[in-house]
Structure formats: structure tokens, C-alpha cells
Length: 436
Ligand SMILES: *Cc1c(COP(=O)(O)O)cnc(C)c1O
Image (tube, rainbow, N blue to C red; front, side):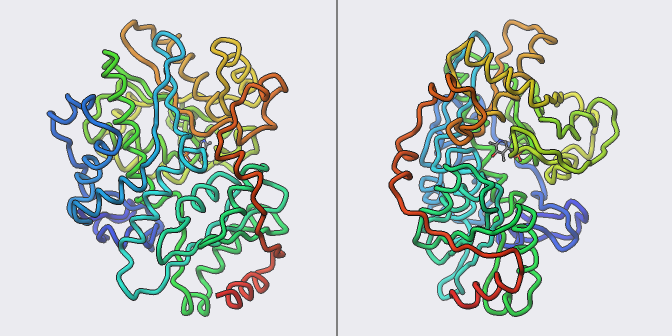
């Protein structure tokens, strides 16, 4: 299987190159040269497979031999070693919990799979892979924990001092081993600027084999299709076969993976793109005009994206028939007031606590269901993060009801290891060169 750039289908590379480059030179995104169709037998009997079995089947079809079967199986069993349960909250309303991985967010699927794929591709004797990543919170935790202990890799995380939640900071700074954290006296944008400059610095590139763990990497997208198939499998076991997914969306990687799963043959009735005030896509679905905007800050800050980078992939998936896309996706957007109301309603109705991102997906699902009444269609909203990661988002009574996972309690006892740096490039570069 080759991968082409969405900006130039003639520019094709093998999987390894797509993984290490993240983005083609022409600033498009890599896409598989064809979308493999999963066989009917597999799709009809999804309910007989476990999550790792489903993952292996889907990845085998997509990678088409790029990684030998036994090695791919080992990668998947190592990477996808946690569950993604579908939990019933009421008749035809289920939540797909994607926060049972080490960083308690769905980004674990992408980061864990990508790290192991990268490590596998590093041939014997090859230079250590140096991953540089700027984070506003969730991405850094997933990447740090995703690469922790992965051979021949090292991760340097830059995060803005005082601007990530306590648990996020603990996830970034308590790892040791091949992970190091830099606490930058600046904003997330400053962190990102430092990483970008490092990638264009000649001396650093000669000395190190640098790569980004960018969210647009194709090796992060592929594993996110697994849990859509697995969610469907769980619903089949309960006699449900008509499913709608509501996805809290920022960069549109998560919902993009769902649409890819659909293209591979997963029978989904409808996708709901649920956003906060950064409503570029819902606005496009209503007006037909795609107009990226500067991002605005919200309570659901992992979705504060005004120009979703994965949209180019979704547009590419449906380039033959844009009306098909419009039939398949509906958009809803909500402000912070509505998000808080939704958190409260979910708590009142089910005694269940959702993070602000997840609350938006729930609200969008309920609104869609009210507009499209049908008895046999099951709604699933995706829970992208555990609520304990965002303690400030909740009133005291709801915060008190959050069950904090054991892994988080263990973090509290661990010492913070972070190096404080300013936001100037020279200081950052000197740190990298001196701490090799
Ligand atoms: C990253 C993230 C999102 C947005 O996912 P995209 O793939 O960028 O659309 C939603 N919720 C949480 C908690 C996240 O960390």
C-alpha cells in the first residue's frame, strides 16, 4: 500500500516514509492509495472478535504487508492493551469510553500504535529517534506515555508553564526513562514555535534524527478506526445494528477515522460532528462555505481548533461525491454555557460524569435524536477523556462524584522532573545539544 499526498496524488510514498515524515513536503496529508474493503464475513461476525483481533484485521487490510503479520500482531497486542467499552446510559443512548489507556484520553490509541510502528521501522544500528512535541495538555501526555520505554526512541515534551492541569503536568513530568519534560516560560504557541524552529535548524538536524509526533500522522489515524469497529461489535452483541456516532471534534482526526472505518465497510447510519464555539465544520455543513477562523478559547480546550487540519483528509475521502459527505455527517456546535448545562444534565439524568468535550458530543446526539426520531437507531457518543483530567470544569458536587483511577493516585507520589527554560530558541537549542 502506498500513501499519497492530498495535494498531489502522484506524490506517493511507502508507509515507513509517511510515518516518519508525518506531512509531505507539499503540506498535504498522507492518504492510502485505495481504501481496502473489509470482507463481508468479518463485518457480519464482528461480534465474535475481541478488540485486538479487530485491530489486527483492520490494520492488516490497511497496511497491506508493510509490516509482517507476526510483528504487526505483536505491535497491536502491545499497543492496544486496554478496553474501549460501550456503556448503556438509557434506551438507545450509549457512551463509548475511550479513556482507559495510560493518559486517560483517546489519543492513547494513536500515540501507542505510532510509537511502536516507528520503533519497529528503526533498523538495527539506526540513530535513535528524537521526538519533539509541543503540548497544551492532552497530546503531550499521550505521546509521553505512548513512547515510554519504547526502544531506540526519546521524547522531549515542551509545555507552557502554569497552563496545563495538575494531572496533565504529572503525566508529562513523572516518567523519567526516555521521556524528558521542558517547562517553557511562555504560551503553547511559544512551545510550538520552538519545536518548528528546531525542525528547520541545520545543526540540530545533522546531530539528531528529529521527528514530530504530529496528530496528523497517518499512524495515529489508522488505530483510531479500531474502536469504531469494536463499538459496533459490542452493540451487535446487544442486538443493535443501526448506529449513529457523535464525535467531539477539534482537529477532526477522531471523526476522520470513523469516516475511514465507514469507507472500509462499517455500516454506520450517521456521524455527528460536535464542536464547541470553534464551529468551522458545522458552519460549513449548514452553509456550504468552508471558512477557517482563528481559534477561540473554550472550556473544552482540546477542541479549540479554528482550522481543523484533518478536514483535508475527510474532503479527500469524499472527493468523488461531496453530497455523500453531507448526507453522512451532521454538525452541531455549543458554547461554554451549554457545555456546563450538558455536564449537569448528564449527571442529573444518569449519575454519570462527562468531561467538557464529551458533554458536547452527548448534547449533539440528543439534539440529533430529537430531530430524527427512530426506534431502532442506537446513538453512541464518544467520551474522549476521563473527567478527572479537567477538575476545574465541574461544580463541587459533580467533581466529588468523579472516580479517580488508581493510575492517577500513583502519579501523586512521584517526583516532578522538568527543566525550566525560557521561550528563546537559543536556550532550547543549547539544552538539546548539551543534554544528548
Ligand atoms: C484531542 C481531543 C479532542 C479532539 O479530537 P480531534 O481528533 O482533534 O478532533 C477531543 N477531546 C479530547 C479530550 C481531546 O484530547
